[in-house]
Length: 510
View (cartoon, rainbow, N blue to C red):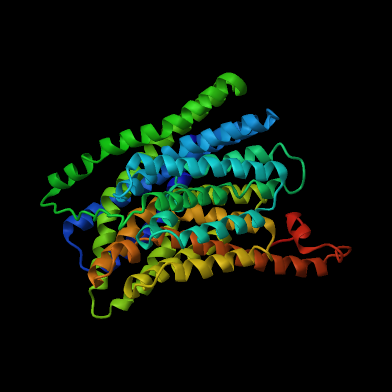
């Protein structure tokens, strides 16, 4: 069984990663010649990426999802609101501290101590996971909460020093990475399973969306306290490798770092689950063995994946950005960036967790293919706009404010489930591939054109997190129009609103 599953996941990984490898190779043999050392490191990183995604996807399916669902169900069955909120805060806090991407961000912000930044962001996620639990338990409309909290975010953003602004919005993206998303999404499914009303499945989405707001608010408040001036970001190191032995040492020296990092990352989640197993769950031996195998796959997958993207992809992204932006027709970096963005989101491991969850909860009415296309278009647009910022020095406010106004405005007209999925997608799309390839790509381009890296290059994660909010909700409008047409064609359904019809997923073929 595991061998068949592994083959399926390997095929998915190949389809996801090979296009971006092909694009980079095409660029390196045409407009952006690349040194052999960087190219070979990139190719080895690509192999690690494919194998890592394969193991991680299978591990998330076997372990992270079942663990999250069972913990969520057990928390809800206690019927004690105080206990649920304490456990929710603790869970959000521990998972966030274990998120590898947060460690990377903390190392970049020199004006704030690493531990202070990490604890602040973790507290923000923990607090907003409690908010998300309250929303699910009391069926509070997600749209109203999103509007209120994002209004607060932008009011605070106007008070924060400009050099620190991108850090705050990027924090919302890095905290919803491959470690956090599978567990939190499964937690939502487990909690919603207790509710018997017809909106329970819709409300199982939205946890990632709200948990993405917490870090933004937390870092904005931290920026007001510390008054940082110019975050002081570390430049990407371009390796100079003379032979195959040096290439091997380059990768082998990084493996111990990620072996330790992912071990520390998984321990809080495993410990939390063990406590629940001993005190509440008491799962059978067979299920525990399956979860244990899944955790091993998850661990191996994340070690290989993060080593591949950090060691192999980051230097390649930075170098490509520098070379392309140095061309006489530097504007070409905009369409090239859009093509890279279109395909690179498919290499985000958490994207497949979200797509699978959406297909299962909607019985296939919202297809993974439609989700994938909408995400690809959204990320392509976001990278294109980010390249415009790099070339022109345009303030990120000029894009984020209208973007979120449009996204929140659309939420008033589309079915609730699409709004929840869209805002979850924003956090899921802005994962490790964004921070280790697209961000160095923007930094390299910014350095080549003489821009301000802190204000012009950073913010790519925030842009990638924003545009799917619009494209997924536009997908929702399309589905709603089809539902209205179906309403008119089904006898006896004339008085049925489009949302109700859309909720009956087996009635119409979308």
